[in-house]
Amino acid sequence: MSEKIDAYILIAQQEWELNLGSNARNLAAEISKTKPVIYVNPDINIKSLITRVGTPYGRKRLKLALGIGENTEKIADNLWLHTPQNISSSINFLKNFKLYDILNKRNSRGFFDSLKKAVKNLGWRPENCIVFNDSQMFAGPFVKEFFGPLLSFYYIRDNLVEQAYFKFHGPRIEPITIKAADAIFANSAYLAEYGAKYNSRSQDIGQGCETDIYDAFSEKTEPTDLASIKHPRIGYVGFLTHERLDIQLLEQIAEARKDWQIVLIGPEDPVFEKSRLHEIPNVHFLGSKKTTELPAYMHYMDVCMNPQVINGLTIGNYPRKIDEYLSMGKPTVATETLAMKMFLPHVELAVGLEGYLKAIEKALQPQTHEHKVAAINCAKSHTWEACVEKIFAVQDQLLNEKDPTQPKSLSSL
Image (cartoon, rainbow, N blue to C red; front, side, top):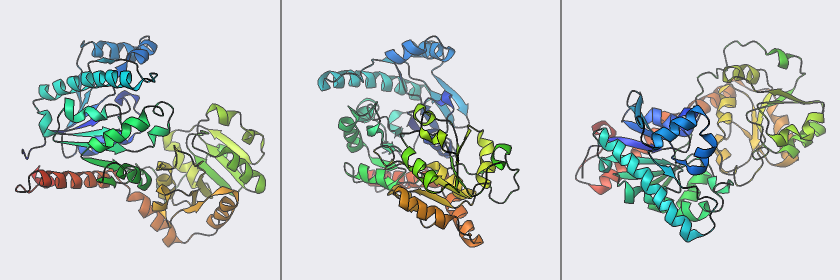
């Protein structure tokens, strides 16, 4: 057994070029401080290619899929980006399990053949690499067969099997992927428990959050579109989507307490745009804001909230906005779930209208300096460094189990 880890291979759900805030990007950046990392874009299928070929990025993906251009490029110190040199068959619509599995295996072979070539071109060996699979469940069963890494990790940071795209084949295939992995990592207790149903080595490693811009004690100018709204202000900041937020609950809160001003900041999905919330006088939609503007809006709220609807998508969800609210020292109310209990006692948890009314009333009471500082410290402790330390601890333990005569520690790798 080699003691040397050549690189971490981070197989991602999201394309790097999208430049969205994502766990995969954050973890890749943090791991690269210690070990080389290859961030692997998802492969592109025929259907997606057809719909995007008219765009500059679509044409770029086509060329790379055909082997024209550099599929692997260095994008930062110790960090490379690989775009697979293959075009997958579009198979998600298939209901025949046998045919789906045959084509899924073929897709996965093409994906890992491209990745193995990239690893070898960088002078590394697949058997000396660790694969960190960011919920790419359909390729997951073939990591060891087609790539053969030193270790294979599977990361669950959302209950994807409840999403429409994954809902038919996901519940059948993700358990296979989980069982095949050497360890499972999740960003909430709920998802770690789900992983533990199929793999005993399943661990909640928490969630990192970039809270540097959220400073509770710095001076801020009150935004002009917020200044005209009366107090108390009960605010939500983030994407306004009916799949994750309880529109009916928001309507009920606004109508039950007309003296409270419900302030909603963020883009709306079509259901929110057509909702009755727009007709309620004490509900205020302020639209999308730049990330750098959000701390000022939070600062001038009296209470911040996350009124999640409880469903398969949200039950295990870790909302980063809770860390942002707490980093601003704001009294916070959120829907009670297993995942949210990790924030106790710094967050008021509630279920239903009566629960929310009581929790908001309590959150509106004067907050001691000590309570505020404790909440801030809680949020600031949720770092990507802490997440990666837990990953490395499991890595070291597994390597020791493979070769107990060789002590493995992060400093020696």
